[in-house]
Length: 219
Image (cartoon, rainbow, N blue to C red; front, side):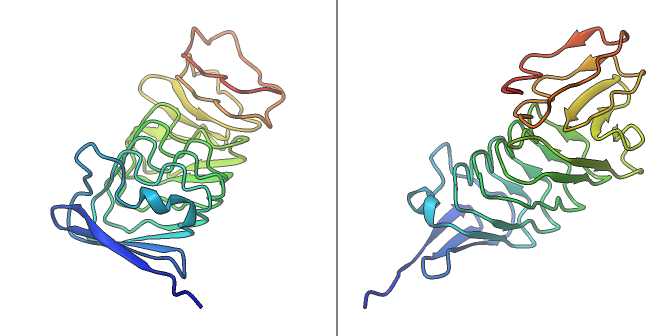
């Protein structure tokens, strides 16, 4: 009977990774910034075998494309030290059905969670930068809420969206989003991948619809 191997290496000046094939668990340990120096993630050869990702408490960022297309990833533990999630970090993780953003998070870059499977999202007070299509999950979000103490975004009073208050922009929409009358801009990729959305009411105060705002809204 063959023994499934364990693999390991570095993923930053002070970070290491270990992947145990028998359990499908990838662990990231150490302190500071994740970095691949422009190269693919060092665990990319095993991406289809990764079932769970555990990120240590002293890690501050997730690199661009770090777990992109880990198609069998179902669980990720985002530690409370993470400040930034890079673009496309979890894009294409089609079986990632639940994500809880940590209270430390400040920035989520473009398409970080594109085509993931989760349908519920809570934006903590700390998150003040959201990139285009950051939460363009497969089928669309069913429930979106924003911490009432967030200084940049709100949820429009349970309108199932993320709204940037100073610019009156809808940043992220979902299924059955109600666009408040104060909103004048629909942001880039705001409803992208909302294939379960069949209708949306666009009021007369809207003056701008961003690029790809309704991309792949096939229904």
